[in-house]
Length: 601
Image 1 (tube, rainbow, N blue to C red):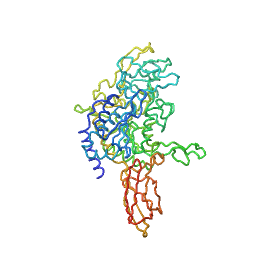
Image 2 (spheres, one colour; image 1 turned 30 degrees about the horizontal axis):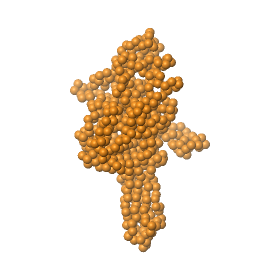
Image 3 (tube, rainbow, N blue to C red; image 1 turned 60 degrees about the vertical axis):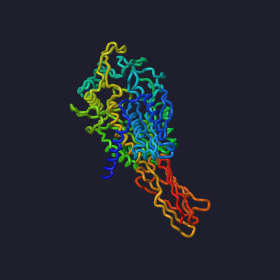
């Protein structure tokens, strides 16, 4: 209880300083504006910050990486923070930029932040899918999640030949409904603005066909099946990669963005924790160890190539469930996040398919956390309520899921659990907040592909379901900044403790030392130990040429040390002259370096 109170006080303090010193984010930044803001911040804080481009995207946008930590940053344990992994969720990019501001504006003013930056390195990637996010600032406006790499989405040998058209010239690509007795869709009885798939078992009859706004450019009677671009950053990573699925790319890590981020991770073994703003949330929907399904495969069915498996001896099945020893840490961190942010009503989070944050855990082997940056909240309509603040406490509806559409606008013809309830909830929120054009009312148009049918365009405005009003960004950012600062303070940290020298005879000494972990997290996760990308702690005993180690080893790679004061004891027998010294050092890129000089007497 006392620990929870201390954590709460610490976070409230950080929220206050975050509100006082962070810049005001009342808009969404285009790529050029983001670049200008990053450049200005770094140029004003050159003593602790630097910026570099990891790669160029197909649309020639730089993939910016800001390092906060000074000239020896790569030698300290680090936290990687990634925004914009989903191109249609610009809020994640804004929150990442907000955290960068939070660190730099408070450094030298707030002791706790100054100490944090002096001991921990932050690698910050504000927007890793800029090609897609830039569609927010262009016409026509449409939900885009893919980069600018031209792809043959419908596999007909042509590239980007059937994209969207703005048929009513409103600058927005929305949905299109065509009145047809053979259609499967009907207005929802609770709100006719919503289109619902007719349920024949209930006697419902469809009267519309539903498409995205556009024409059939290639004459195959399929509309908008091969639009401009591209590959989805958050579907292109190797873990649980779905070959031949829309947005996944021709192969794993096929894109300059994903390749650059993966290479950056492997080039920086000091990264201990990866954090991303993503709908693949595991802080409000914490990862749980899943029961294994089905009988194990026989040993003789194993592939000749070694694979990451649930049971290495019997079943070469790809791991998709958090390791037993790691689950407790995800539960604890998730609980703290929930208590600190007070966010409620989060949509359910399904497993990713080629998702970045899952790759970071299962393949890169690091502690990996993801926070859903925003979702449509429940509302209680009150005449005097401050409806523009969409982050206030709302009734909990954890099982309500705003399903992520398979294409940029939602795939017509595929009903999801609670989909209509969520859309109706979204309409209520739009109406209550008075959001202009949040839903585009159905309006008639003439369509050359349907000369004898009534055609209307309308539906939710692009980006409205995935991004809050800009005036809510500061309130959300204050909570996320506080959590990220708290999480960074939990990184593993190695120390050498309880050193004891025992004379055996005149020139023989027994040396005992404990290698301690003063951080919260173990020095390596169970998944990291299995993946073998994370480095365990190396302990070295340094002696001079006149000394000799009689028992024990000059260097030892020890098993992961548990957090919160976990220890591993090492013992050496040393032949040395009395009064001479040896040096014990313990190091790993993700936990730092500790050393101690010991006099043998």
